[in-house]
Length: 198
Length: 190
Image (spheres, each protein chain N blue to C red):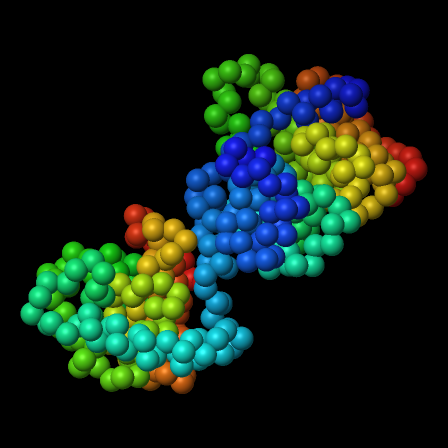
């Protein structure tokens, strides 16, 4: 919540629907960094993330009147952003997805040791290459720290499905990171788990 | 490597701040949603309505502002010209130059010299923001009226309309509708 506006997210959205010209901007300002973080890792590139986030915000702006309050406003916003990013990602499926990752870490080089940075870059690269359902679940739960239930509400699927997607995604990431840490080890074959859920 | 370590490493990934250009673009786009109707048939109807509603008052205001052609324009008065040849490829530079070019210090044409339809058109556009500049000239190969208005939601931007010369009280055909970043001298189509 910003220091300049004590209204809750729901109150801001309602005020926007009622014609308050500042309410939606306040709502966006309040959540922009988390929305950007999600968009950046769900879309294929920073440019796509920017386009998708802008589309999503315009969509939310226009559709605010359809918000019924079944979920938190942030859940609703994240849902719109994730869907916009996944739509964008599907449209650009054949485009390389990893060229931006080094850029993401450039600012950190001064404080990270080389090995750790290599692991981070490889982790980002592997994350970008996960199937989109697993990537979206992991971005929300592991990277952004949402609960499984919150992620399930954003992605509109059962909590068990989120757990399954996260587990399968983490297993793939673990193999990739292990190969970076021990480059001489056999990469092996990653088995697809048959855990519950999708 | 255990899943728990993967989770820990994922949690430790950096969270880059939203770049300023992304933030600016989204804020401008949202501001536009607030104050401007998109350029589609849907809002052409609204523009037509505004044209009719604003024509009488706008005519009085705008003609009044151009009633003394020998005086230097003041900030509140629009710059009114005729005959400029705007090129789409150079449009951003030409918009920037309009505030510094010598010809801008004195109108070469006024609303009093223009048809009342143009006046009504400008009055309608003024419903979105104060008219800063109007030129009855051409845009690329087409005769056009270029209007620049203030952007109420953000003083760093201006709104640019390129419309057909028959833009008037009952009809408006819009060639282009853009947001002009004053500091960056860049244009973004709406």
